[in-house]
Length: 340
Image (spheres, rainbow, N blue to C red):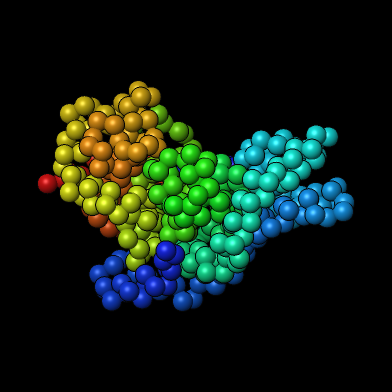
């Protein structure tokens, strides 16, 4: 199923070297025998062929041949240009590619990301852990794109795409000109890129077969994906895994009892009220009803803690079994979660 995930450099290798001395990490597993040559395509380069090559139709057919369903999805859903073989597609895409502001955006991305080798290595390492825990699942093809500041992560059946224009640095002038809120732009740095990519893939790959609208089901589903991030990035700081700022994670840890008590007091866990769900899981500068120091999507952090406790209480459960378990109430019950 195709998915869009709404919104310096710290090498995975450096994190590994810096923290690998800790031998009590249950996710510090041997991946030396995992063979993987991750493919990374520069769609952000290839799409410009439409404006520079003499034959539009020939270039269009070539892109469709190489990128397949992703090419259709990018143009139809990410950029709203419509079908790539529609009569008016050429006019729409050419208008986009020849726009002077768009040209500057592509130029800025290219200057910041002349190649993706470092990130390819980090994702390859993460997907070796993925193969270790999920041996029957395949790694996707990596694709870099320019989304026109629309999306940071896009997932299709076999492609994991990243919008490089959403990782140009938190103080980039383009974000100021586009009036992107600071709660978004402060994580538009390449520190977060590989983590956002893997989290997006996990959320899509293990999407529930039957989507439930209550808060608990949604936060536990997300919490399982972030728990899997513990395994994919066993030496990384927690704030990268969930996509928070470092001080936001510190606030969560210091106020865990208070957060949980408020959810219980307001009977929020089993609520299907759209306002309650959005308050606890939606983006924003903070979570409404909590101090401004809190992160948005506070419910997701709580879901992560519930899943962590569940796995601690049930050490024989494999990561694959966890991800397949869609019974959020049973996970909460068997976690015996009660912060003290």
